[in-house]
Image (cartoon, rainbow, N blue to C red; front, side, top):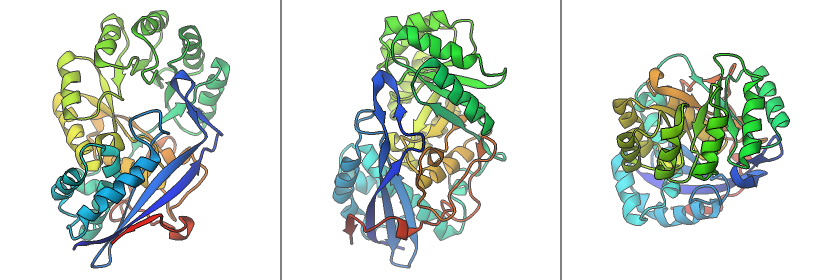
Length: 367
């Protein structure tokens, strides 16, 4: 089995709720996603997706993903997609850094490797553990009462874990947290995610003002050192996300005792292979995880479901179903949640079939 050609598609994913707002008032109303179709000389096809959360969240942007794939793609022609370590070595030789560029190619090769064996991708990633994975719902930043109403609405859809977008004015963020916690029951999980939006003194004001509430604080500040200032003064469990971008970063977090949970984003880490490596290290170190990505649609959601479902259940803090946020589907049989949970498909590979007629013409073909 050898890679014969790579097709690249640009897919616009409009948000069902109109817009998505996070720290410092940054927002998007649609996502620019890149889908990759890799075909082999024996007729198999695998799919991958990369979808940055706009250009101002992580060091990644949609046009950069497609430009980078044009650089990396030729290096994979003739490669066996099942040789996943070799795939990554070839990509590293072709393009230094830029892990998000390589993520969709890695995902498509994983899809192919599992399809070639006739097994679900979760089997290659360690085996599906348990029946399903708990999902969180991200609540876009807004007035406290609107965020509380959104939480109440999504609770009716089955969600029991909520990631509240804060990271703005500390006084307003305190009101947001209190308003949302008031509509939740015991046992339901609230995460106040600042997305690096607070300075340490602002974060300290917030955590001290909500000390009596049951919640997690996520990525309060921009750097590990700043987050440690908050950690040492905080009674709440801490989640770290944006700064966990590889094995070295994870080990620095672990040595400092800086987090109780980490968020692993597939594109941020460079694909399923490096994300699995960090995930397995988290298990050895005793760190719980949220398994997700920067954003995406049906393909990304399927990959998240397989990676999360193959993570030992005791270490799964949550995952997410990004395709439920957007108003466009590209799969004939997209993965969907049931009562706030999602499971990985039992079909080979990612377990979804893409409606190629919904994609339009490829913007790039490498062959």
